Length: 516
Image (tube, rainbow, N blue to C red; front, side, top):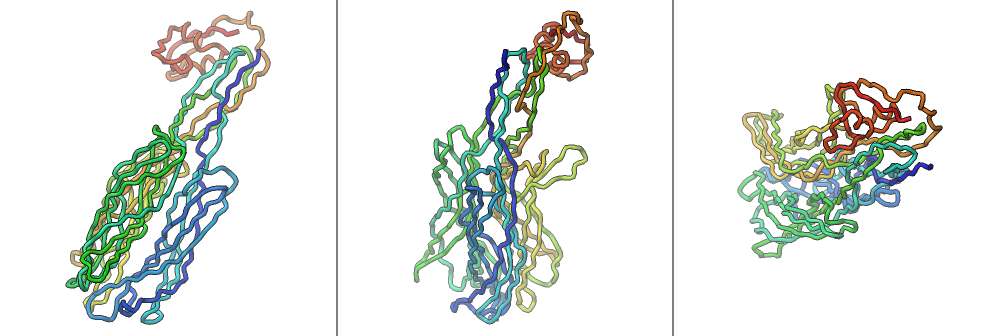
C-alpha cells in the first residue's frame, strides 16, 4: 500500500527589502523681478514629490523632484515674509536582490539629511543639500505544504491557515479644481498645501471606487497684519480606479496625499482658480484560507516528517482618526513675537519596545519638525525648529521585520503661540490606513515512511498513561502509534464537536489501546 500525499502551494509573506537612497541637491534659485530682493534667508525646506514609483522585473524605479522652498525677508520695513521655490529632478533605479517581489508601488518615506542655503546676490540663492529617500518592497515566498494524507495507517492533525495576500496595488495621480476668493491687495500667499480625508471605498470586480474630501490650506499674510493666517477650502472628490484582479470579497486600503497646489487668476477677477494635484494610493488584499497538515504519523510504519514555517499577513489594526500633538519649549529670545508655524511630517514606522516579558512588542512612531517663525524687536525674522516624535495609540506583539504598514499621514491643523518666553505649538495629524503583521505557523512540507513496526501480538494490549493538563490527544496517541479516535473512545472523552486530533486532556490517567 502506498501513502497518498496531497500538496498545495501557498503565497506567503517573504519579508521586506529596504534601502536608503541619497538624493543630492545642488541648484541656484533666481528671484523673479516681481518679488523684492533678498535681505535675509529665514528658512529653506527640501521635500520630495514622487511621480513614478514602481516595482517590477526585479527592479525598483522611482522618479520625481525635490521641491526646494526658500522663505526670505526683504529690506522693506516690517516683518513681511516671501517665498520662492525650485524643482530639482531625480530618477533612481535599484536592482533588487534575487527573489520574488510584489509588483506595484513600494512604500516610501524619508527625511532631509542637510540643507545649506545662502544668498549669492539680491536676486540669486545658492542651495546645496541632500534628502534621504527610503523604500521598502514587499517580498513574496512560495510555500509548498501538505494538505492531506491517506492510507498506510496514517494519522494526521490538520490546521487552518488564514491570511491575506496582495492582489493589486496602484498609485494614481489626479487633479481637482475649484475657486477661492482672490487674495486682497497687499496679501502675500506663502504656501498652499492640503490633505485628503477618506470618506469610503468600495471594491467591485476589477476596480475600486473612492470618495473623500481634499482639504486645502492657504497660508498668507494679510495686508494689515504680519501674522500668518490660514484660509481653508474643501473639495469633494470621487474616483474610480481600474484594479485588475480585484474582487468584491477583497478588502481595499486607501489613502491620499496632496502633491501640489496652484492659484491662478485673470487680472481684475474676483475669484482665483485653485488647482490641486494629488495622489491616491490603493492596495487590494485577498483573504486566503488553507487547510494544511500540521503533524502526522503512521500506526504501521516508522514516520519521518519535514516541518516548515509559513508566514501569512493578517490585518492587525485599523489606523484612522486624528492624533493631537502639543509641543512646548523655551524660546531662544523671550522677547520675540511668534508669527506662525509650518510643520514637516515624516511617516510612522514600526519600532521595537523594550519588553519586560520574553515576547517582543512594537509600536508605530514617526518624526516631525515644527518650523516656528519669530520676529525680534527690530523686525528681523528667524525660524526656530522644534523636532518632535508622534505616535499613534496601540502596542502590538511582534517584530518590525514582520510588519507591513499601509497608511498615509498629514497635518490638518497647526496653531502656535507663546506665554512669556514659553513656546506652545498645537497640531493635529490625520492618519489613514491599516497595520498588517505576519504571523508564523508550522506545517508539514514532506513525509516519508520507513520500516514497518514489529508484530505486537506478544506485547501489551493496553497501556496506562498519566496525562498532564493541556496535553493534546494526538501527541499522546503518536507516542504509542495508536489511533487518536481509539484513545478518545477507550477513555470516553468528551469531544464537544472537536476532532479527536484537536482534543486536549485534563490531569488524568488514560488507557492507551495498542495499535499493533
